[in-house]
Length: 102
Image 1 (cartoon, rainbow, N blue to C red):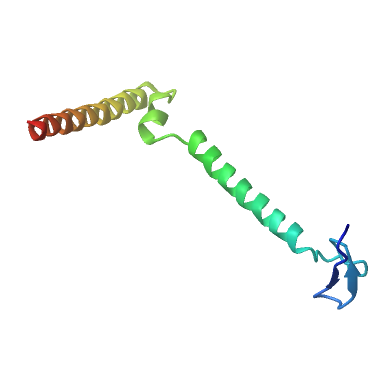
Image 2 (image 1 turned 45 degrees about the horizontal axis):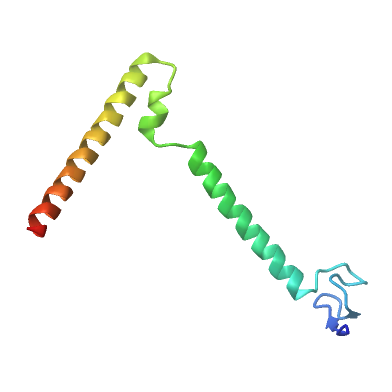
C-alpha cells in the first residue's frame, strides 16, 4: 500500500504527486531527499576536517620531517621538550594519586 503525496512546489506552485523534483521547474521538493542531502553534506564536512587534521600534523612533527637539517634539529628539540613536559606531568599526576591513595 503506497501513500499518495501531493507536494506543492515552492518555486512555481505546481502540485506534484509522489515526486522528488518538480515536473515543471525541476526544483527539489522532497523533504526526505533534502534531509538526506544535508546529512551527506554534513558527513562530507566532517570527513574533510579529519583529512585536514591527518594531513597537517603539529609543528614539531612537520619540522622533524623537513629536508633542511637545522629545521630537523629544531623539530626534534621541540618534540623532546613536549615529551619531557608530558613525562613530568604524568609522573607528577601519578605521584599525587599515590599520595592521595595513602
